[in-house]
Image (cartoon, rainbow, N blue to C red; front, side, top):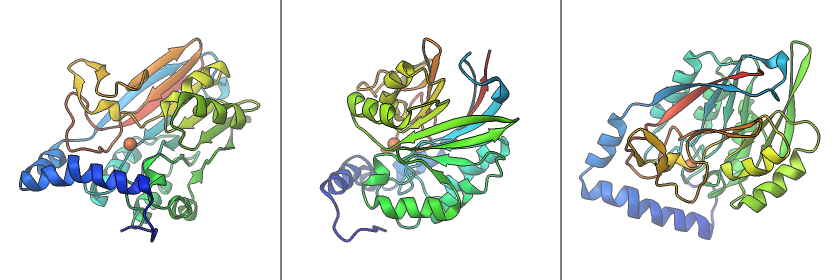
Length: 281
Ligand SMILES: [Fe+2]
């Protein structure tokens, strides 16, 4: 259900796209498209990330990374909660969600935020918003996240104290271009930053310029259609960094291909939750 009385132009455009690529074709296929989509399993991807810039007191920390639920027609609440449960079973030290929690409508997402907040990760759950979270009502989404106890980073920072050391985490709101991402990174990441959450992976160029050890992103969905055994050759052609792990000097970027979808098809690009073990040497 929609939260705002007056849908924005961006909302109306996204709704139209949804009808053209998702709900319309599904109706024509008499529901077969959605059924096939829901038959596909969500996978757990485990990745080790090594960078000498990572603080040694946090060596071996396990980050549960989840992104792009797109709660809505293609991601019913039960499927979203099952994905959270999959990640919870991995017992990550910290959970990071990099946005697009909802696809179109803001209302009704509370149980998902509560599940993410209750994953029992000892160092908490962090969230940044994606472009889809801004389509309906960004304050409704933000309030749901905050009420559930999630640390929502909207062009802001937080710290985690562990083993007597401090991990500095920054999160930026959605920005479309590399230039706008860079402006946000330069503004928010003044001072020491170890972990940056940005829905758009285009923030990585500025993040590596600032020597930020690790950036986590989503947004691209890995193109949803990729060449077999070549996940980076995919439909997300507007993105230099679209799937998996990237290096720039000693900075690292991990781009999740997402747990959800914006159209009901994934080929050679399975939906995923990720467990990232970060090493300092
Ligand atoms: Fe997305």
